[in-house]
Image 1 (cartoon, rainbow, N blue to C red):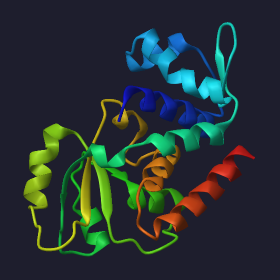
Image 2 (cartoon, rainbow, N blue to C red):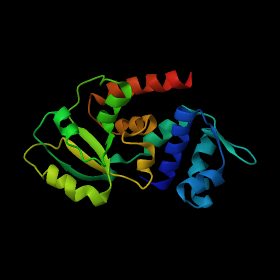
Image 3 (tube, rainbow, N blue to C red):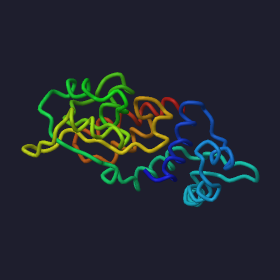
Image 4 (cartoon, one colour):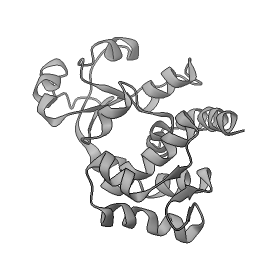
Length: 199
């Protein structure tokens, strides 16, 4: 995930989890250890579209949905996949075998966030540090006999800051980029949850 995407994520997460819509570029740069120019770059297009409103000393998330959909439209989830395989077990069994350092993502995260899955799903996604990839491969050996049902995504240095399950905005954006038919059921319910929080 690109640095600018981690900034958008944090802005959206802050709005949902902390009801915080106002930020300074300096505070974000310090939080992530990024340069001010990186933060400024992340705000350029959202500012042009009205998702973010810049003031003299701070900026405000003016349109949550506009930023969320913009991020979803340019997210390249496929590029973050560092390993995929087919593991012959049920989805609950696979989820129960994930390494301790794994961060549940995709439909698994959606199920946790929504308390129950709005549809049955047949694929498991999770984020993992590349350093732990060898252990995951031992647990889930390469199997190309059937289409993959387990996908490991490369965790960014900031991913772990938000817990063992991807956040609501992250989960929404990731599922938005999956083409499985049941993804639409998740998107619908996640949208309803977002609307409920923002109302």
